[in-house]
Image 1 (cartoon, helix red, strand yellow):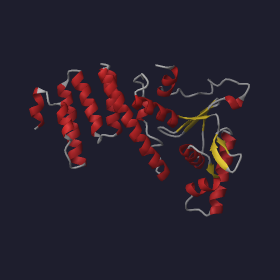
Image 2: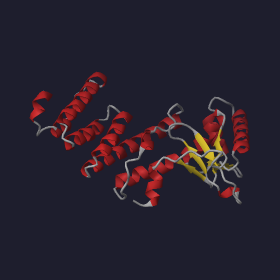
Image 3: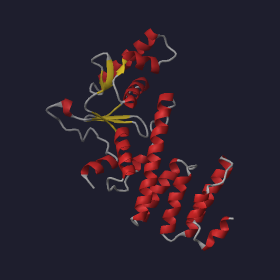
Image 4: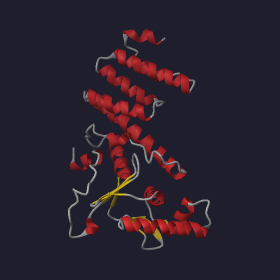
Length: 261
């Protein structure tokens, strides 16, 4: 696996102030913006703490991933305020952001964008997930950040839409990796990844099927049937439906298939 692929898939170690090293050109130092599993900004000086209003401005700009007009940002984030008050709130948030980490937001013109030295964990994991789906890299099973939701405690509409988009991508990538590891007989790793996918969405049948295939490949038909029963109960209690025929097809060749009736 290439060093580039490894850097995408491994969780980055948080910087600390002890780790910080002086540099001749501060602008060249990277600022890491974390949006998965919560908001975080880490630079050479360590973790930076931002008030919630400033966090919302940073996250909104980062999720749009393009230059945004100031009026659009202010109007989107302060919907219940007048245009003047929304603009004032935005100016106040930008001032606080600049005081804490001046490289985070480029506010030098009529538009706002992330600074050129800012990396975003969401974008890195999106790239990793797409690489998994294309099967164009040999990845390790250390993909724990694909289990993380985008800003899980935030409920703004603009976050909810992006969270669902990324959730679908990461769950599909986990299932794909689970099947690939199963085929490679790396069954312990396959099971770990498959269960991450099930935990991410217990009502996702394809995740249960991936886990069942791992159990069967490992010679554990009883565990495969147990997984089927779990899926069947969840579907009955929460959706009022039965699992699809594809679930039973996985167990077709088992002597214990009669127990599914």
